[in-house]
Every structure is written in structure tokens, then in C-alpha cells.
Amino acid sequence: MNKDELKVEQGKRLSLVLEQTHTRGKHLGDVIGRNLSEQQVSAMRNGRASMTKRTAELIHKEWPVYSVSWLMGEGEREYRNEDEREKAKRHQYVTEYGQAFDGAELIANACDFNIVPCGDDSYIVATNNQFAHIDGDEMFALVNEIRDFVRFKLSRMVEQSERR
Image 1: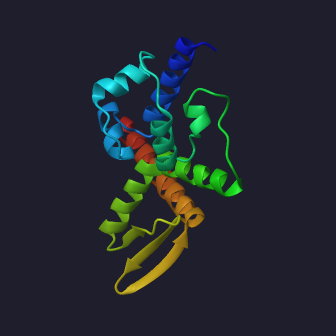
Image 2: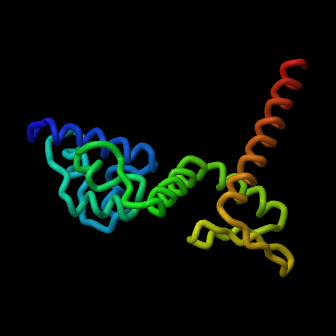
């Protein structure tokens, strides 16, 4: 792959990262802790500028699912070890189910519960001076149950409305 093709490939991959992480180009620098203008990010996305290795390293640090070599346009996504693969899977879960979690948190708050992420892929659920420490899998199951219930209730409401 020549230099121009590599820039285009890096741009496609950066665009995918921004899309999957729901990050706007103008906010990327803030998120990864690097001074990047919206124009610089746009130039990288459109294949007019190369991504630096340092930028790729900072993106990888923020979102481990994207390896430095992959961001630089080389090969497929790789992981150094199983722990990194697991962290990447967890991050993907958070990214994909972030909105659902926000909904679960909203419902929990309405029921006088608080959900507090602990940062180590676990959560504290608390109410009335009582609490439970749950892991990411339990939160994943809870979010899915809430999502399924809300989907069921909304479908029923739509069906009832159509019958009127």
C-alpha cells in the first residue's frame, strides 16, 4: 500500500472509530487529550493527512478495541493479550449499550435507586442506605431486561392505539 492509500485507509478507520464511539471530530482532541483541530481531524478522515503514531496510541488508550497498528492502517484489529481483548469487549459493550444504560439509570433513579459505575467493570446499586455491588455481566443482563420490558410495553401501547 502506498502512502496515499495508507492515508485513505487510516481515514476510513478513524471515521469508523468516531462513528462507533459517538465522538464528533471536533471533540476527538479533548477526549484523547491531544490538541487536534476540527480541520486536522477532517483532513485525517478524508485521507489528506496521515495519522501520527502518537494520536493512534492515545485513541487506543481511550478505546482499547482499536489497536495502534489497525489505526495506522495495518492489518486487522489485534490484541496483546486476553486481558486487552476482554477490555475491548467490555468497551464495545459500553459503547453499544450506553444509551440503554442511560435509560436503565433513568428508570432506577425514578424508583429511588442509584447506579454508580466503579470503573473496573462493576457497579454499585444503592437505595435507602443499602447497596449491592454487581459486575458488568449482571449490569448487561439488567439493561437487556429493562430494554426488553420497555420495548414490550411500548409495542403494546402502539397496538392499543392502533385499535382505537
